[in-house]
Image (cartoon, rainbow, N blue to C red; front, side, top):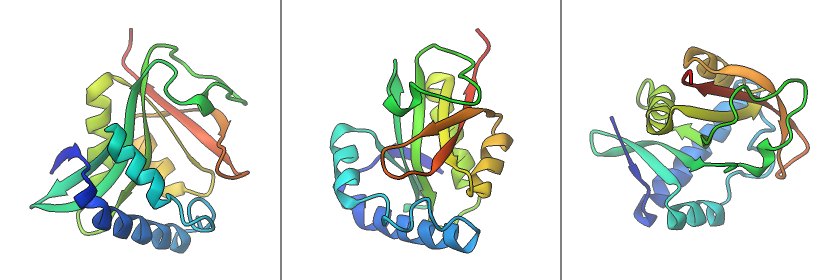
Length: 167
């Protein structure tokens, strides 16, 4: 597998992956994270591609996964307020959002997360409380649950996770 920046030509594959992911989440007890709002919207994906924050995971020439990745200082405004805990490391970090796979290749999620972590050594991610599949993956990848954050897209709280190299 390899990771590369997404291009507009990847948009049909990305949209199909997100449609698959919404069905998968609903079938696995998580119908509310992306389903009711048909998340993520195509306009947002186009913006991510234009800014260089959108990535695809490719295996055998086929796009099998996609995600948003950005790194820097305070790159995720919704992470400024965390309740029921706190971030463990205040250094610059990377954030991964909207990670999804098409179900045809094994280990896509872990591969993408490991790749993002290798870019910066400090990642923060969040997921819906009903998304037990993602929660297990984050723990498998060495993330620690740090508390709860809230997003602008809906009223469901998100579980916040972090993984950072020791200083």
